Image (cartoon, rainbow, N blue to C red; front, side, top):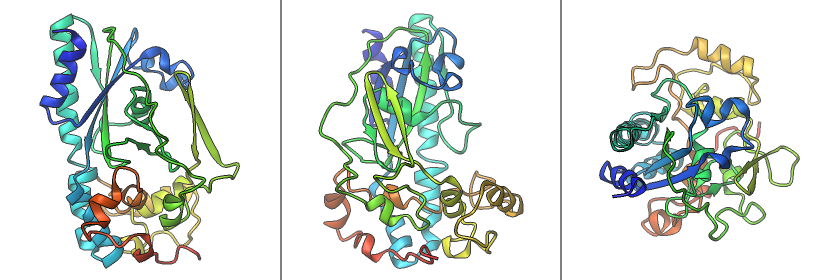
Length: 304
């Protein structure tokens, strides 16, 4: 059995839903500190696996955002963000790395797979695009045709030279000239509007992608629940346009969480991921009466 088939069989046997492989030359335009060879000298191939977020876990966010059931958000934190599927990704990446080293004698390095692990050595989303799994959505999250933005990624770097998969070349998954759901549903307007100068671009292989510039302090304020209206115990920030300094001060004042593995909870939002229409959203959620759509989202004071 060739190594590419062996890698993919290992990934799927360990519960992964997607697996793609990129050659290291697709990262020629990456920032030097983020290049795969800065983690693994001599890296030739980048393997990316993905596990989808369960529809039943995504629907918990609809209950929180539309019905006010903030008590259910911990289910998303456990099964969709902090713990699982990140445990599964960690085990799968380790198994793939072991398979490569045992079968080829080459070096294989699994990288961190989520917020429960030790740092962010490489951009998982850029690797996912380079490996052909999908493309960037306007909100800067990777969209796949199968699941939209509702999956988590893991990456293995290896010195083994493995035949790469083609980059995604199917129908455009996100058209920000027609869809503004991610910008409309964001409770703090953290996602830049299409047509503004606030955007990013990334070149991977021979493709260049453009996506929104995210105002991370605004995003973090909601994800970390630094205000009561976003699920926090108290208002640790008194503005709707916080600075990085405000976020750092709120983080320092935030109590240690007893709800999961994270010292500082970061799973209180997920609106853009939950409501993005890509990945058969209508059939999975609207048609099953699991969501009434963004018009039913309790928005709080987003316009203040």
